Amino acid sequence: MDHSGLVGIYLAAGRSSRLGRPKVNLRLGNRLLGGIALREALESKLDVTFVITRQGDPLEWLAPFSNSEGLRIIECKEADKGQSASLRVGVMAAAETGAAGIVVLLADQPFVTTKMINQLIDEYHESEQFVAFSHHGVMKPPVLLANSLFPRIKELEGDQGARSLLRSGCLGKQIKLNTDVYFFDVDTEEDYQFLLKNWPFL
Image (cartoon, rainbow, N blue to C red; front, side, top):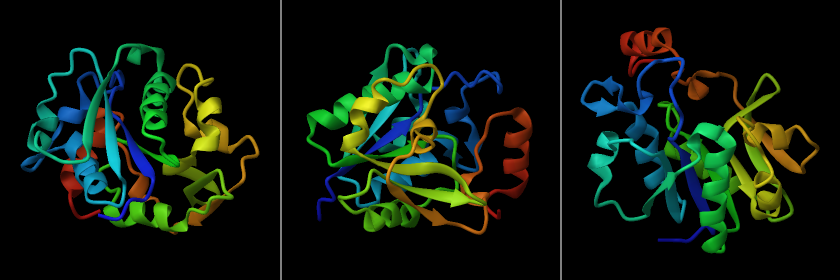
């Protein structure tokens, strides 16, 4: 396997407070939501993917990947402090591997593809701090962040995510997409019901 020098940070430690139950365990046909984009990440050019989970997660959704190479599970003990806590845990793990950067992925985005992840990697240049997808000028995950941003990621607090960094004048590039279906995520029961009715045809 060719090494990209980049690792995935798969954020799966959210409280799912708006949904009322763990979204990663939502069923879509014979699959669970949390595992859909993860499979795409594991088939991409990423060297390794760190899955950030929360304490008490039974990890049912991760069972199909128990023997997967390139997968590491990290429990975020401070997950209740918001997305920034998960990002910090992931960045520390990435830094220990000497990664050139990370690709931040969300566990509730079932339409993210291996092709998208590889496009971020292929578009990345050492002189840049990020590569992100955008729709109508709004940058959305997944996003690639160079290791030069690691110190700033460690300073994030609460539910601040990568987007707050990209708005602060970082040097990078945007890959414009004409449709936002790839960024669809599941936050509410209405989102889940919509997905059930349209999966996998969106």
